Image 1: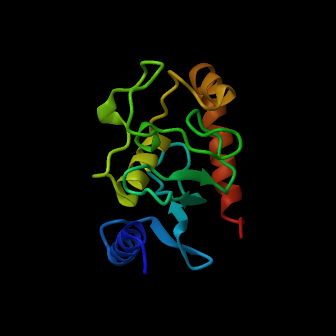
Image 2: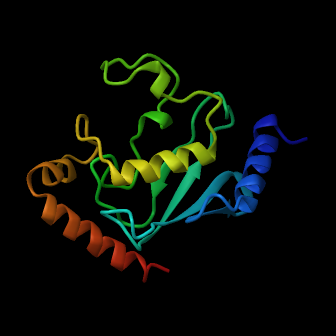
Length: 167
């Protein structure tokens, strides 16, 4: 018998795959496992840093989903203040629903069971266009974004071009 998390994730995947209002987002299962999704973000040209790029990522859902958030990791190289050098995404919506011990985030900004894979991916696309450098996951990217915006943009656009050949 499938867990309630597996049933919910199956329903959410099917909905996202049929939703025509989500241009540039494609999702599928990894090894037919409903708890592991492969995601492709096809960034529109309006995305000032990564426009035209195709960025592959993975969403890994815990068995306690939707009470706990998934983890998201870019598999395509990406340079961003809110993405660790290993590809792990650091965004409030993916942080567990508890008080932030460092005081950076309000509880309302963190994960709650009303969130979904769709709201996560929309938030990540927004994050890619508007980095938060207050508590960066990638200090080098945050420093470059603050001190050398042209250099940051060039590096991101190079990665976007390279992503097109990322098979």
